[in-house]
Length: 277
Length: 269
Image 1: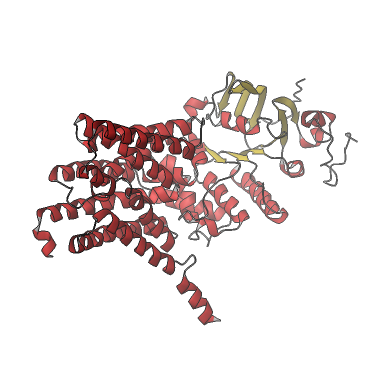
Image 2: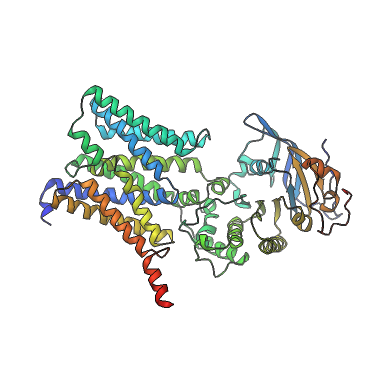
């Protein structure tokens, strides 16, 4: 508990838990709708946005926010028009956005430690303004997910029939992409551009390992996210290791355990069968 | 080229026409997919739609559902245009060609059927008791009672199709539009599905549009059949059209799928 005596650690913990809740909820849809690569694409594109912010001197997170939403809309627009497949568009956009970022940074000569913390996250990076922005955007994303939950679920399960039922599918789809983009942007400071995709995938994947009912998948996803972030931050604080990387490794450890315990293919299940034989 | 044989109706009061398609033409990406399609569907009728691959059968269904706007002609469903229909979709149950769902998707049969009621629950609302009752009734009607808590991915192919039928039925469904619902099922499962459908049609007075390649199934269950290949080739009772030369013309090949299905009049030979 001594960790909480430090202001930066308090902020990291409050921000971290908010981020964990947000990412875990989004993670459910990322996993069931198979948007893992979309998450990767948008998060890497954020680098371009951060670079713009650093170079022209506005808040890099704000710049990344605009940039990510733009990229998310681009992914949606291209793939919905049927010109290209979603993964092709992402493959094109994410490398281009990163290249653009690298170029900007090298021209403006701002390559410094600051940039590293955007790439890999830092426990020191959170300030109260970040947390307020996080809380506001988090409330926005959470209300979108909660209010349109059954439409999102239907859309994720079977898009064609959902469209034929007259549901506002285009709105739901773009809404989900924007929600993913905003979640990524607010999580960057703590876990970083490169590592944020783990928070978007592993909690949901852990949930799906342990349950076949979406309600419990959501609960497990939330627990996984929050526990990993809190534990990761503690470890990061005590051993003075990078917060983003620690959180991701804790997430992975929990996921491995879930896989072992999974009723789908778990070792425990197999042992039980063996015992029954 | 076009021949529409109108079915003779009984002398009793004329049945209500639930779907009226008049001179509909659809182009997609500059190609004409459908031309001059006209037919009507009377209440309580089972209409089979046949035609070769790429004939525009699915496009026709999408146009009826209002997902595609026809370039010419008009469509009215229960007296409404597709735009008006968008707000009245709870009378139409639709089952797509293949529900491409992830078998690991964490939903139960009950959850899947409840999805069918999404549009009538309304945005920003939760399922009420009525919704839950309708879902259970629908699950019972297709004979999946007792399996409602099973994850959808753990059902057999035939049971999955019945779950999707239940989803299409759980509104105040008057018209069922089924796009090759029995594709990929073995003969026994197909048989079960068709007799279930036939029973539901009688019990609930449903009107059915049924797209299929399987002429033998339609020969037994359809009241009327239309055959399309870009344009209308035939419209009539199964016994009148299934043996005809014109069907061959529509498919542009010799085929013998009528062998052994109990249609005596095989004028095609």
